[in-house]
Image (cartoon, rainbow, N blue to C red):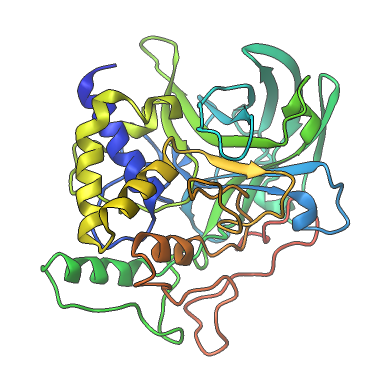
Length: 399
């Protein structure tokens, strides 16, 4: 991998990991919710969010040893329109076993859950094959079916067998659960850069949730912890997700998207040169020595945002490599618990306000909210989402 790619990747990783709502711009296409549709990467190859949580923290009646993984794709899916997963791509959850909650992430793919979709049939259904890979070896594979928009109230809940493990899987359209006043953020950012008036975020009765009314194509899986453990007793895991697209010339799959901790398309570096670099590498490349100049630039931005030298170093150390860690012995929730480095270690629930959490972290408490919530406020029709479903797959029904 060349120097430019590695440096570019770490720029993006730093912007993603340290926070999602800083006032210095970055043009990231990882963990950015929506980086736009281009000729070489259609919307169905675009990741929006990753959620990982203990199922019992979403549903108290659920099995205490089951985890839920959610991969959302295809941002800005319009209401009452059918969208499909690419039949020329691999959608993958990747998981590392972690020795303890304070361990440095390795980016090692101990377990991979791989989804490969067929073309849709005349009813709008896609067949998919879910394959489990452990330490590079396939341990099981089974077939499921997506839920078309016409069957939203009677979803296909696929009970699949992967080796000795039973997996529940759903794939189809659901309401996008993400919430953030992106429009006002752009104004806040412009003011901070001196190219617009100085403004703050809007009040709750005026704030606009840019994801309101949109759907996403989602993959939701219920995974027993024993599948992730293998022959170990691990209780902490690092998770990230990727999309790889088949190159027609080489006939090989090339990673084009990668996502872990939540974020948008803003961060620490003002550049367009590194748009796709982060998406093409594994977390193990985030701390490459070649990326040191980028780390220095990110640190200068953190200092400019009011962090002292020690805190800037701590922030960089806490969030790289970029993975979503979940300690399954603790209650799930983004930022609910941190490890010794200050890194979140309890996954992410569907209604976690990750924007408020990262705003506060990045600005050292100077900015704490964008005044948008999942439920919204009764006097503001520009925000608010449908109630989550009480049972698997949990995301609200599509708009």
